[in-house]
Amino acid sequence: MKKQILIFLLTMLPAAVFAEGHVHLEHAPIDTSDMDSVKRGAKHFVDYCFSCHSAKYMRFNRIGRDTGMSDAELRKDLIFTTNAKGEPTKLGELMTVSMTPDYAKQAFGTVAPDLTLEARARGVDWVYTYLKSFYADPNRPTGMNNTVFPDVAMPDVLASLQGVQKAVYKTEERQGMKIELIDHLELEQPGSMTEEEYDAFVSDLVNFMNYLSEPVQNERKSLGWKVLLYLAIFFVFAYLLKKEYWKDVH
Image 1 (cartoon, one colour):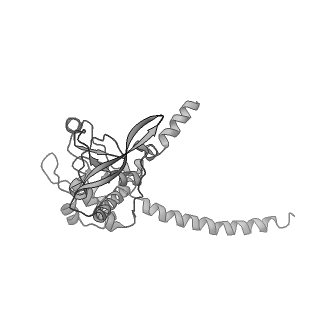
Image 2 (spheres, helix red, strand yellow):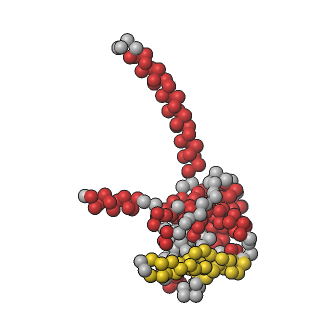
Image 3 (cartoon, one colour):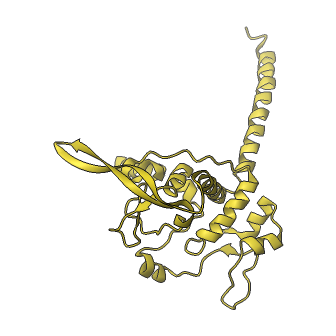
């Protein structure tokens, strides 16, 4: 019984706790109530992630409804696919990809995960840091590696924007042995964006992924404050009523 409880608790812990290499995670400067940012992030997601990664629990028209995008904007910025009959993808369809698991295994050695709940499972800080932590590694099949997710199969699809980073190593002595560890990353080849522009780009992308993981979170937070306010007011009346009932007891 104790073993089952321990296994349950471990499965409930956020995956960010087990971040590979215990890398320090940067704080993701996101705000899901900023729908302009979510809208920009949705376009970034479709442009750079959606060809391999699905978001199969989200529908295009739900994004449009929440961000205020018209049907024309959805088709212009987010929908570029067709169905099996060659017809344009419908606004109400789920965000699935045509890449099959078998093809993904041949191309990358693994199946590209669905990203609908990735920000919730990993944590927004993990995703934000991950997208900024690719570096050149000639020993990897893609030529790239990642400090947050060592030996990741995913290529650095954002290298043209961020540029190519290199790892700067340091030597530490542990248990009488000297080992080399990555100290930090340095930009070796500039991309099309400055560091500030790329940080803003990733922030919008992660903001969208955070929205994607729980589209109703803004309503939930707003409702939560209303419920707490109601309980606070109700407590005052309940307390006064209690005093009235018990005033003659003592």
